[in-house]
Image (cartoon, rainbow, N blue to C red; front, top):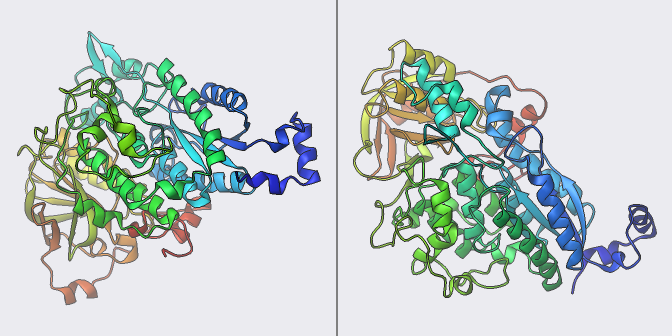
Length: 551
C-alpha cells in the first residue's frame, strides 16, 4: 500500500488536521479529496452538496478521511451570459487547475469528483490524468423535464423557441410558458447534449463505475451510485489503481465509439484530446476518430431523434451501448472497478433493445460525427446525426463572411443570407473568442427558424452547443482566424466546397493568393483571466489545453 500523505504527515500538518477534528488514527488512513462544484448559480450543480455529504459519510465508513474541496462551476445558461460565453470553455481549465492547486499541493491520496455540467467532466478527467492519483467520477445526473398539456418540454425547446420567435418561427408553446416548465429538478440538460455525452464518455473510458451513466439527477439510484463510488475510491487507494493505467488507447477508442453510437456532442472530441494530452499518452484523438468512423448510430436520443434521456437510461444507458459494441471495441481496457470492461459486461443483458439497437440493425449508418480536412482546415468537425438524406452532406457555394455572431444574425433577419450561401462566422476560436466564445450556436437556430438550414452551409472556428444538430454545419475549424488560418482570409464570394464523403473542406482560391491575404484584423476585447487564456491556450490539436508546450 502506498499512501502519499503518510510521507507528508509533518507536525504542522498534523496540528492543522487535529484542529479540524481528525484523530491520531485518522492520520494513518487514506486522505480522499471530495471534489465538489456545487453552486447556487445553476440547477446543474444545486444538488451536489447533498451528494457530497453522502460521499463523505461513506468514505469515513470505508476507512478513509474525506476532505471536501470546491472548484469553479461553469454552466452554459448562466455563466454563458457574460463575454459572449467565453467563460464556459475557459472554466474547464480552471477546474483542472483548481484541483491541482488543492489536491496535489496537499498530497492527498485519491479523489472522487462529483461531475455535472458540460465542463466539469473534462476538467475532472484532465485533473485525474495530470495528477495520476486514484480517482473515480460520480455522474451528477440530468434534470427532470416538464410537461405542457401532456407534451414533454425541456430547455432545448426554450432555447430554440426563443431564437425562433425572432425569425418568425412559432414555438410549440409560448416561450415564457415553456421556461416555467422546462426544468423540474436538479441536474444537467436533458438530451444527448454535451453533459450527457460526457457522462457516457466517462463510463466508456472506465472512469466511473459500470451502469452509472446517465442517471436521473438526485434520484435514489444516483445517491446509491455515489455511495458505491465512495466505497470504491478507498479500495482504489489501497490498490494504487491510477488513472493512467485506465486512460489507455483502448479506453479512448471505447469512448469514441460510444460518442459515435449515441450521436453525441462534437465537444467530446476536444475534451478527449485534452485528457489525452494531460495523460501524456501521445494519442491523436482526431486520427482515432476517423479510424472509428464506421461505428453506426445505435440510439437516437434528442436532439438526434425522439428518444428521451429517461428512456435511454432505462434501456441501459452507456453500459448497454458498450455491450452492443462489445465485438468492436477494446474490452481488455481496465476500469475503476478494478476489472476489465469485458468483466464488467459479462452476463449483462440489455433491458431496452428497442431503444439501443444492435450494430447489425442500427438507427443509421456512421459516422454521426466526422473530421474534415483540406486547404481550408487542418481539422474541422461536422455533426451529421442520423444520415437519412434529410441534411446535405455535399455543398459548394459562395462564402458570406461575418466577423461576429450578432452581425450574422442580423443579416439572416434582414434577408441578406440566401439559399446556396456558405455562411462563415469567424473570430470565435480558442484565441479569437477567446475560449470559443461568440455564440455560434445561435446562428444555427436562426438559420433553422428562417428556413435556411437545409439550403445553406455554416462554417465557424467556434464551438457549438451539444443541442445543435441542424443542416450542414462545420465547426471548430483549425487553424482559427486569430492564428492566421484560411477561415480568417476568406472573402465574400470565395467558393467553399464541403464533402462529407471525401472528409474534405476546401476553398477555391490559389494558395499563393490566399497566403498573401491579410486576416480580418478583428480582435474580441479580453481582460483578466480571458486575456491570460488567450495568451496561453494551445491550438485545437491539443484540445485547447493551457500548457507551456503541446508535447
